[in-house]
Amino acid sequence: MAETSNLHIAVVGGGPGGYAAAFLAADLGMRVTLIDPELNPGGVCLYRGCIPSKALLHVAKLIDESRHASQWGVEFAAPKIDLARLRSFKDGVIKKLTGGLGQLSKQRKVEYIQARAAFEDSNTLRLSRAAGGEDSLRFDRIILATGSRPAAIPSLQLDSPRMMDSTSALDLSEVPGTLLVIGGGYIGLELGTVYAALGSKVSIVEMLPGLLPGADRDLVLPLHKRMEKIFDSILLNTTVAAVKAEANGIRVTFKPVEAQPAAPQTPTAVPQTERVFDKVLVSVGRKPNSDIPGLEKTQVKVGPRGFLEVNQQLQTDDPAIYAIGDVVGEPMLAHKASHQGRTAAEAIAGRKVAFEPNAIPAVVFTDPEIAWCGLTETQAQKENREIKVAKFPWAASGRALTLDRPEGMTKLLIDPASERVLGVGIVGVGAGDLISEGVLAIEMAATAKDVALTIHPHPTLSETIMESAEVFFGTATDIYRPKPR
Ligand SMILES: Cc1cc2nc3c(=O)[nH]c(=O)nc-3n(C[C@H](O)[C@H](O)[C@H](O)COP(=O)(O)OP(=O)(O)OC[C@H]3O[C@@H](n4cnc5c(N)ncnc54)[C@H](O)[C@@H]3O)c2cc1C
Image (cartoon, rainbow, N blue to C red; front, side, top):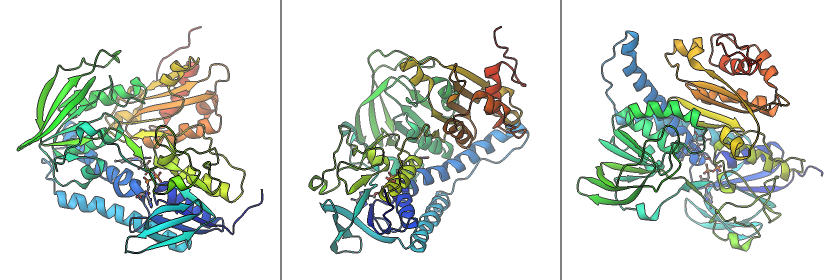
């Protein structure tokens, strides 16, 4: 197919999917209009997701390390938290990044319109501008990148300033004395970590038998142990039956979940109890923004879970409309959204492309971090797939010991016949940065030998990936794990 660079494209939604699509479409010579209600591009990730949470987690880690430092012979006074300055640090990071994206739009001659879009037909959008006024614009192709919003549970909806979702939790209006986080997924754990470091007594309630249900249990275990120390309580196999606003807090009724097969580290559920919390953060997942006004006037199909249906070129059932990012499905992650955005732009330009990654990394930015990519052990067991797992405990890593963080672990999931690396899992400080090597190994079809023979710098945590591969051969230098002969 010939490249079609003279098209006029609209991108609806300025998150990491939308702006990546818009910028590449412009780089490929298309005329591009990017539409989002905010002053600048950025979407959930920059305004109320990845970036503000990581700015706060950085400060949480600093506080935690300053407390821990006495064990290394260095005493700091108890930290004094100036919430206004902390907020302004976080807001400053957001402003710098989103302002930068506004500049990049101008440099690429992407027309940025601050508005909400609705469909009039497959090629026409009605824009309600933030500054007031409406107009209709026609486009050759439209990319939907409308993202997602926090899911709400009707029985937990209370009109009270004490109830928070991730967006209001990131506003950091105050540090509550006690905080209940409903949901043991990554967003709840990350925000719980921030509030615990700032001084809240944090409790987590999760209906499943373990935290982070999508992750392998051996990766979650070291995090769970540490969270038991920093959180007031972790209630598993437990649901919230009711919430009620009272003068001095939110009264929460907990109910045990009926018998579930327990994970190894799982304590049994508590009997029905009630407790009052200063604040409650509901973090029970995210819902796709597929309820775009006028979508029914197009041929776009919405699947049973509310995601827009697309093919491997990210094209919907309507030939003029593409969709990317959170609104098309899991994993709802910024880097998946941007890669899909770039694929959609190339597909529209007529390039022969498909979104078919072998590995999409997932990172939980808690302390320790957890990261994985490719096949997981849980998935391999479900699919009855034969794999070999090679693990390297960080207690044998010089670098981990210099950081006083030996609880980590790196593992490779290896195909026994071809010896190809199929999956990588890491728990430990900096796991989120280390996982990229695993993604590269999987995408490049690396074998365990390739990884073992790649010289890694010493002393670094990255060596644990190389040494895991050595464990597979029974020849790891820093740990004695002979292969059965
Ligand atoms: C607290 C939190 C922490 C997170 N941390 C991470 C992380 O560390 N790493 C990671 O990869 N992901 C993280 N995520 C998830 C990440 O933010 C999303 O996966 C990512 O933002 C999805 O990008 P997107 O482009 O699909 O849409 P979004 O970023 O959701 O952007 C969609 C945009 O479209 C706009 N929009 C919606 N409807 C319309 C309309 N009709 N007209 C015009 N505009 C419209 C919205 O206002 C929004 O600005 C986090 C999310 C949260 C909430």
